[in-house]
Image (cartoon, rainbow, N blue to C red; front, top):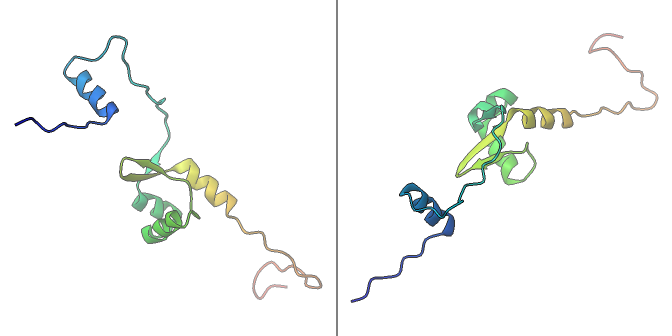
Length: 108
């Protein structure tokens, strides 16, 4: 009886060879530059935005929310992306013609 062929994804196979010391000569991994960026979990991002994790999940699903990073199965938000999204989400209130702008309710 012949053994079943095993299919291994090439990067996994190379990683395995590297671990056991049989990596091809000159083989190296491309590494992304390490940044000092702050990454937040969805719960932390929701607290930062004063929102709920459910709201962030729905925004991800409908592609309306802040940019996020997927690391494996984990979702992370960069704090700079959250700040940029909040800045871009500022609503501009149009002044209606014939109405004077007031400073607040009951004033003016």
